[in-house]
Each structure stands twice: as structure tokens, then as C-alpha cells.
Image 1 (cartoon, rainbow, N blue to C red):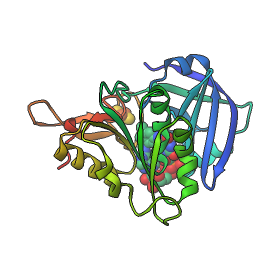
Image 2 (cartoon, helix red, strand yellow):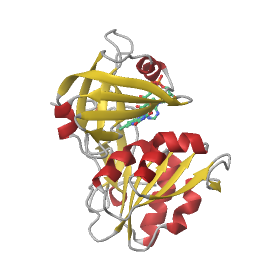
Image 3 (cartoon, helix red, strand yellow):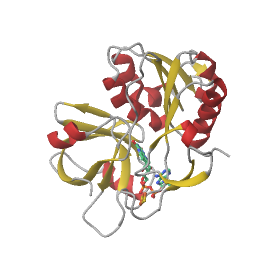
Length: 258
Ligand SMILES: Cc1cc2nc3c(=O)[nH]c(=O)nc-3n(C[C@H](O)[C@H](O)[C@H](O)COP(=O)(O)OP(=O)(O)OC[C@H]3O[C@@H](n4cnc5c(N)ncnc54)[C@H](O)[C@@H]3O)c2cc1C
Ligand code: FES
């Protein structure tokens, strides 16, 4: 059973329209967390919404854990109203995260929208390495506050693509894939179609690649089978995998993309 915390909210603020930074003070949680893992958060003490909401760990520093979330529905809108000093019922850290050891390969972080968030914590672990980040978002502001500016702050080389052309290339982040060096290793998080394109590219070029998948979740700990995705066994057979406990991060060779 995963650890439960009554985590103290240190701050919760809207960092750009619709995107919130939630900082929790919980040293034990911070010590346990690994890049790519997530927290399953109960957004209030009511019976509605009943289910916890899964949110990735964006940043860990001095006993604090930061989440970046987009307010898209009932749960995240309630979470957006949580105030400093309140306690949140948090389960985690959950799931299998990124393998943060790139060996002698060049780490390439590819993120789309709020999917950039978990790459921040990974970049913290890769500090001192030469990191290339290929990031996409609706505009430059959203890209920066979804984690882009933190990646730059850590010294990563950031190449951007935006829907409105306000930063970097006017288009999709997948249009930057040819910049991945042959000796690269890809770590990606973002919308499904982006991950599919990244996986296709990596598989075609023989570049190692780990992707963080998203599915609707209930228990978050592998018990309810509410988050199944199609995986591949080592013999190539299609098998069911639980995104919450077998993932959310998968080697692209272990996912059935058909
Ligand atoms: C492992 C994992 C990590 C995540 N990390 C982050 C993160 O760091 N920041 C962030 O903003 N969001 C993240 N999400 C997505 C987040 O969990 C959902 O946006 C949130 O649960 C929506 O709850 P809600 O009650 O506000 O929306 P709802 O009212 O439940 O739904 C609103 C809309 O969001 C869609 N939605 C709900 N849950 C998901 C989901 N799990 N995946 C995709 N779409 C969903 C619904 O279909 C609907 O269109 C993550 C999801 C997973 C599975
Ligand atoms: S959410 Fe229950 S098994 Fe994954």
C-alpha cells in the first residue's frame, strides 16, 4: 500500500492563465519521490469528487514537492482554490518513473503542454549533464510556466514550438524531432498523439525512448484495472498493462502502438 500524507500546502498560485503551482511541505514525501512518479490527491474532504486526482511531481527541493496542474474540470478547479496552510490528503509517490540514468547518451526531454511538468524533476536529477529539451505548448507563456523556464534555469538547451508562433517554431513539437541526436535517449511526456509520433520516430531510428502515459485512474495503485493500456510482452504478444503501477513511464518497446 502506498504512503498517505496529510501534506501542508505552502503555496498555491496561478502562474499563468489556467495553470497552477501547488507546493506541498512534506519532507518524507520529497525524500521518496523519483522523477516521473505521481501523487494521487484527494481534492477535498467531501464525497464528491470521490476519486483522487493523479498529478505528476514537477519539482523537489528542500523537503518540498511542487505540482503544476491545469484546471480542466471539477477536481482541479477545487484544487485551484486550496489555500496556504490547509492540509491535503496525498497518496504517493506512485508508479514507476523514468530511469534517470542516460548512460553515455545525450538526454533529450520532449514535452507537450502541461506534460512538460514532470520533466522538471527529471532535469533536476540530470543536472550537470548536457540536456536538450524540445518543448511545445499553445504559446510562449504557457511553455515557460509549464516548466520550460525551470529547464532553462538548469542549463538545458531549450528548442520550442508553439501553436501561435509566439516562441520558437510555429507548429508542433514533433516537427523538431529531427534535432534528436543519434546518440540521444528520449524522455517524453505530453498528449497521446505527440507520444505516438515520438515513439514512432524513436523506434524507426533505434533511439532509446521512455514515455509517460496518461489514462483515467481510480485506485492509482494497480488494484482496480481502471487504467489499462495495451502493452507488449518480450515475445511481442499484446498484454494489458496498468498505467498507474506498471507505468506511467514505459519503454516505447513495451507499448503496443498498433
Ligand atoms: C499519471 C498522471 C499524471 C498526471 N499529471 C498531471 C500533471 O502533472 N498536471 C496536470 O495538469 N494534469 C496531470 N494529469 C491529468 C490530471 O490527472 C487530470 O487533468 C485531472 O485528473 C482532471 O480532473 P478534473 O476533476 O479536474 O477533471 P474531470 O472533470 O475529471 O475531467 C475534465 C476533463 O479532463 C479529462 N481527464 C480527466 N482525467 C484525465 C486523465 N487522467 N488523463 C487525461 N485526461 C483526463 C476528462 O476526460 C475531461 O475531458 C495526470 C494524469 C495522470 C494519469
Ligand atoms: S487506477 Fe486502479 S489499476 Fe490503475
